[in-house]
Every structure is written in structure tokens, then in C-alpha cells.
Length: 374
Length: 141
Image 1 (cartoon, rainbow over the protein chains, first blue to last red):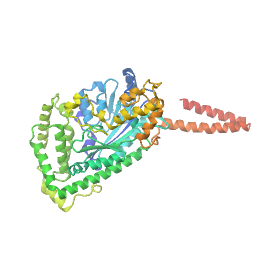
Image 2: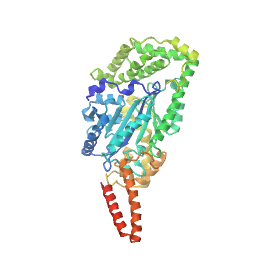
Image 3: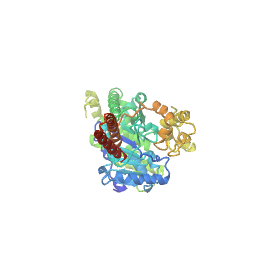
Image 4: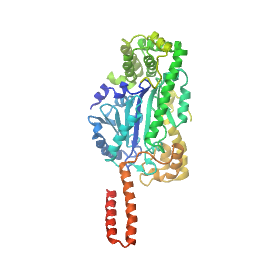
């Protein structure tokens, strides 16, 4: 499979059909593994990294799940192509910075991606739409078992799987979900929520993980610890917290509808106006406004069939996607211009927000609770 | 935790290219871990990969899986502070699982062998010895 094929089709997770997909954009689980008695990628010399890659890559490519896969060495990918993969969460930003001796292999559906020689020799990640952490884990677990019969992993009886960074030792597992929480942000409850979540050993991060800013009201929540707890216990704990957050987000939206409906309509109207008529738009502004439109779809201000075009814009307006689709490298100003143009075109057939529908829904309370409407 | 907000220009000026450098884990590892390790093993180098404690201080990452043994003492304190427990309770690789089973069977056979020898039951002892040899070769595979 070529890069152009990857570019042409959006990952399955973007279609947004998983459980609780209104609020949970995606679920991801990754496992970190290393070969026994070989230096970790960050410490290995170039020749050693290359020999490790040559050992691992064919084993990964021959997996049943990797039939017709996309497999490429990092140095064969342009900076822009790597960035596209980062924007789709198929490789990490750290991996995108790698060169000789690193590779990525992913399946056709873009639900499974394996980074070779990232921080660890193997980083296997499964990504699903909605809240499906268990299913995502099941797939990487299966891949891990298949690979472990062919490769000898660094494993210690007491410490479990050994990783380059001690924060990953044990299960080597990081489970995370991307949540869209505009209700909690608009109600100014988000900081409280983040603090509470951090206190119970979970991490909340921005759009692209560690150290990144929250944009578009998108938050990543993941397990912080990997030692002393079983994989399914970690996933259950995380899933429970996410279910509570879904509930809180729905509650916040209800309260906004009932008590601050003017503010809500104003936000949605402004977002619609700016997106429809602007001629220059930075990526952050686009994400923030698209988030409000997405909320509008959730609340019935826009028809349900408008959901996918908005979800697609979240990815398509990211800098690398923009440049890759226009086949040229653009400076920031040109990007902002093109971004606004694409959004205007896609929103051409977008109906105006139907506030009466929203008002009616808030009036009779027909917006169902979080856990029984899906 | 120290929160730093830098604009684009300032971050470039300060040489911050990658915001992950500010991540909590790295902060913890860069400062806390190096100190912890200093207490444990002073100027030690990993005999397998040559990684030193100074390297850990710099990167917050270890050199190879054997570093977990080399820097064991200090690392354990760090792991204890960082994680829920100090022992892995999750998935076992099949290979390790198999090795554990074989070891267990070998121990039982060795006990039986001792008993057989004590009872001067040489026929059984010979058979047990063969079985142990068989398992040893399985383990070596």
C-alpha cells in the first residue's frame, strides 16, 4: 500500500461509529516491547538500530493483520508525510523525528500501527472509534502474542516488560481516549475535572499527547502507571472514569441549555458565521470553532448527517493535511488562507443553525441521559 | 509541577523545539530519578551496554534491559514512587510462562530423584534423570 492510499482514505476510527462517539472521539491502546539483550533505540548506534529494524520489520509485516499493509522506513517519508501520520495519531511526534533505523507498519484500515525503533524497539498501537478500549486492547494483545513467538522480548519476572523509560515498565501499556468536552469547558468546570482525574492516577493531556495544548475542547485521558496493576484492571478503571466524564459532560450541556441557552446559541451562531465567511483561519481557531459546531450537531442545531463533514474537517484542516492535499508547501499565511477556503467550501451546503429545534429539545428535556441514548 | 507557557518566539529563543521536553514524567525523571540513582550506584556503568548514570540524568531513558539490574537499587525507589506497585502482575510472555512451568516440573522431578536415590530405587532414578535432562534441553531451546 502506498502513502497516497493512506492519504486518500480516512482511518476507520474517524467515521465515528463506536459507542458514545459523540463525546469519545477515539480509544487507543499501545504496548511497548523491547528485544532482549539489545540496546534501546535511543542508546543504540545507527548500525545496531538498523540491524534491530531488519530483524523486527519482516516479523511485523508477515502478521495476518498486516496483509496489504503500509510499511515504510521513516527516512523514506517526507517531513510532510510524517506530519500527516502524526495528525492522524498513527505515529507519535517523537517517531516523526526519527530517521535511519526506524519504520512504521500499519494495516489498511488504519486501526493498527506499529512503530519500530521509536523510544522502544516496538510500539504497537490499536485505535478505534468511540469508547472501545477493551476491543483496542484485544487487538494489540493478539499482535503482541503473535510477535512474541518469533521475537524474544525483554521481560523480568518481577518488573514485567522492560522499557526504555521506567514510566512504562510492567505492562508497557498506555490506554487512552480522546474526549470532546465543550460542555465542561463552557461551564468552566474543566479544570476541576482535570484535577480530580489527575488525583486518581490518570493523566489528562492535549490533542497530541504529552506536553501539548488542549485545542478544540479535545482532551486525552490515559493511565499514568504501568506497574502493579493488570492490563484489564487498568482498562476497566479508565473506562469507568471515562463513563463518568461522559455523564458529567452531558449534565453540563443540559445545564447550559436550561440556564445559559443564549450564551450557547451565541457561541454556535458566531462559530457558524466565522467559519462560513472567514478568509483566514489559524488551525487552533478552526479547531475551537469546529468544536462548537460539533456540539451544535450533538444538540440538534444542525442535522445529524452534517456530523461526518465536520469530523473530517477536524483532521483535514490540520497543517500537514492541508499542504499534502494541496500538493505544495505553504507558509503559515497561505495555510490560514487555504484552510478558510476549504472550510467555506465544505460549509456551503451547511444549513443555518436551527435554534428552534434546540430550544424545543431543551424545553421538553428530550435529550436523553448519557448512558441510555446510544 | 511547574507550568511554563512560552510563545512561539520565546520557545525558539530558549531552544525548546519539542514541548514534550516539559512533560511531567521527564521533569520527574530528569531531576528526581538521577538523584535517586546517585544514591544507589555511584559511577557505575552498565556492563552490557555501557550506559552510565549521567546518561540517564541527561535523557531520562535507560540504555538496555540490563540497566534495570545495573541501576536496580535507585531505580526501585523511583519505580515505587512512580507506580501503583513494585511488581508486575499483568501479562506473561508465553516463553517466560513456559520456562516457569518447566522449572517447576524440574524442581518436582529433582525432589523425586533425591527420594528415589535415598530409597535405592535406581530404575526410577534413572528414568527421572532422563526426564530432567529432557526438560533441560527444552529449556535451552
